Length: 223
Image (cartoon, rainbow, N blue to C red; front, side, top):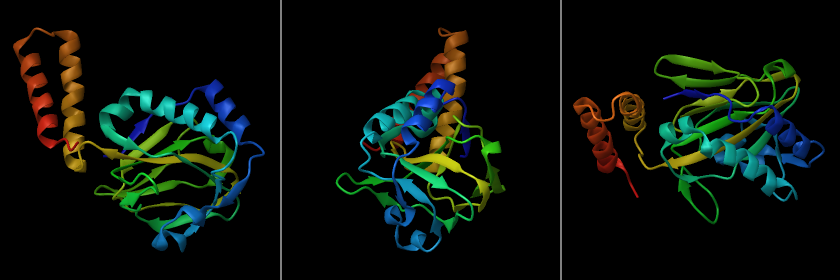
């Protein structure tokens, strides 16, 4: 499931994020890439030892994990500290699949990939996130503050930036439900459940859908 999450960061939050990143030290993005991805990764990333990074992470990840669409679509069990990636003229990230297991001290399985856009689309030329799906390649270039989530098993790439600067936060989640098709089914059923419970909480069909959702999640969750 590929999903847009609108308004993760508002205008004031974006201003804070950009202010904290402005003038910060960036390093070669290959340092955080796996063996296969190193060959095609051409960007820079905010240095992990930057003094402001903990405050930045609290702002960005706090906003993301509070968003109901993120919670319902991801069903997160573990979430990764984000990378802040910058693409300038001539930089890109070629075809790759995210590493299945990530983390150094605390290992986690990457089930869901999330890109949060920090630059406006008009601030850079090119730089589209291109995700291969069963319905063809989806081209993603959202407004600043919006995010996209998609299965980490998807092959994807970032087109070459030919002008301006593309700035994004990238993170991953290990879901309670490993299988992407099951997560999508639970998301769709959960949306219907929430509408039914809001409209007619005591109706028989509301109780039936609620029971089905809860027990499917119980059946499929890995804890």
